[in-house]
Image 1 (tube, rainbow, N blue to C red):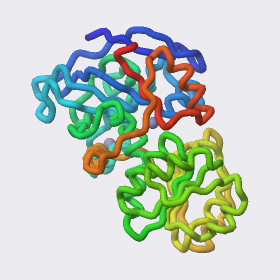
Image 2 (image 1 turned 120 degrees about the vertical axis):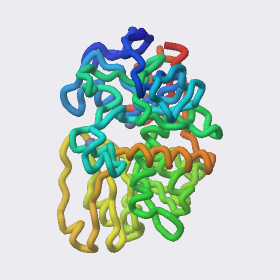
Image 3 (image 1 turned 135 degrees about the horizontal axis):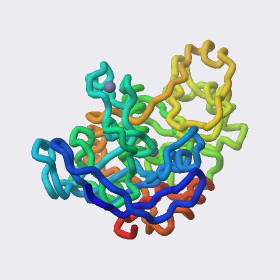
Image 4 (image 1 turned 180 degrees about the vertical axis):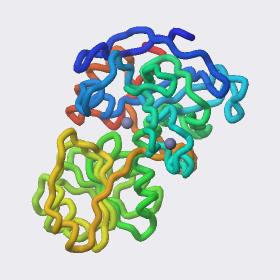
Length: 346
Ligand SMILES: [Zn+2]
Ligand SMILES: [Zn+2]
């Protein structure tokens, strides 16, 4: 066991505070990662405040982890000390079900093991990336290409793969018209990746406040959803819409923006159920879909793609003492576009 400094929420809705946690011994197939940076994902806040149901406390959030390998187990073949690596939303899965075998570990039939707020297959609670070190099985560790700085790479491990996976699956590319709903941590990554894939990209955001950023990051168009004209003028305009917002949407209104057989994919998750008129799908043969992060191999593909295209997240680097304030700012949509904790300050 090793003791590492961390930031934890001691109870639901309680402020996060500095503490120490124990990491397991480095096992046969484990790597010990010296965490350098950890992104703050909106889902960290949902979970630390039990917005998604009962959670495990104390909680060390963080599933956008970037660091350097500092020790490897004797059976490790893919990594060596000094390698630049990342860890995303999962640290294990059953490895035997159809989904695991197909590289869709995020949909493991037995349930993937979350990087935090989960119980590992050893029966111990998992603690995430707001910490100075983590021990992870090498099969759930990603390689961060040399061209990517660790700080801007960290958010790719959740925000990057969460948007890359549906964009690839539903064919974003040259000739496709993609709308990104929401211009936050996930949305700004969706804009960059969809643009790099060659799609025509439109941002649909509540206001035009972040318009200049959106256009600079690769959007071709930027429209305000608070303006009713947006819904009139863009009716039937998109092949694919990726909704990154975690507030409930007027799904009927958004679905009307899809062209024939278009798809609205949700990667943001409101805390309450949503409703819609099914005629919004039936007319036009439209689909409403969901997508959750991506598999391990696909996450590596995304990192390699981002490195090849010079894509990192737009970040605000903060000290650990600023985490609670950062949470409030995320809830106010007041971050451009991802807070990243410098874990040396823990
Ligand atoms: Zn996340
Ligand atoms: Zn499985």
